[in-house]
Amino acid sequence: MKVSLIATVKDAGAHVGDFLDSVRAQTRPPDEIVIVDGGSTDGTVGVLRAADDVAVLEAPGANISRGRNLAIEAAMHEVIAVSDADCVLSPNWLEDLLAPIERGADVAMGFYRPIVGSLFEAVAAGVALPEADEVDPGRFMPSSRSVAFRREAFERGGRYPEWLDVGEDMYLNHRFRELFLEMRFVPEAVAYWRMRPTVAATWLQYFRYARGDAIGAMYPERHALRFGVYGTLAWAALTGRGGALKLLGAAAAWQAGKRLPRTIRLVRDRPAERALAVPLVPALIAFTDLAKMAGYVAGLLEQRHSPHAPSPARGPRAGTP
Image (cartoon, rainbow, N blue to C red; front, top):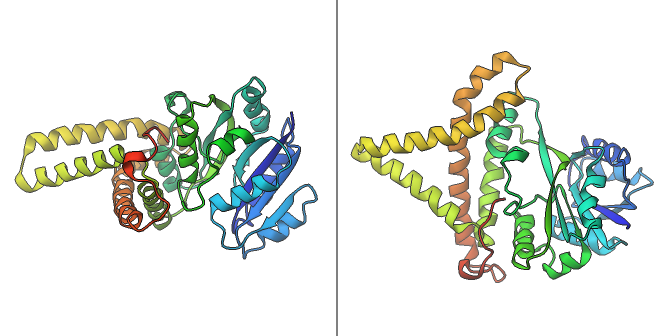
């Protein structure tokens, strides 16, 4: 079975070399590598062009969906592995990812782990990224930084939606689920992913994620719950409802309690930062929730004027991203 590894990239000149090195170190190398550049201006294309084992397509202005579709159109093989060209792949990533497809699965869902430097990046990873043992394989929605599928499944799923700038991989995942394709979780197939390094970049990340959810009519119940919780919190604070505040405080402590151990593990070799993580985790949870609410509202307003976006009534069913 031959496999094409495809990826998209834009302005990742500092990291694309690490990605290519990790691809070349695979225990099962891909049969071809196709990378689409969306208009880099930092030398990324030069690095890619210098690699004689990479087919490079330049598509300035293309969003990620368009870039991935172009790469898959150009790929020669019937099995497609997908990542991003600023990730670092574990040595056995492709070998493990292909195993369930070789046994007949339509989609192999790899996992991802954070690359962290600062305390802020560790907290952001702890807040956002589950551990493998927290994942329900029957509901997991893989990121396209770590996934493989048969071309037939990709075409049946309708390809990546080019009208959706963010959340395109979740949208395609919903199509796979609705088609009852065989999707297998492969936690050993790990792609390492860089966290956003600043508060501003993190806000924009979650704003855009939620905006994409709204435009694509994804996870309406989850977003409604978030608005309900924070709305109730504001009402309880304004009216002095101590019981409601205590209940919401307990729920917030439970949420932070799940994420704090992840963060502590990421900074376990830096004792001075462990204590600082305790207040930062709930603070970042609230911060990202506010970014999601702002993004979702913006997306709902935009969805009203989109000729392509589905209505919530016929949008993808809810699941776990």
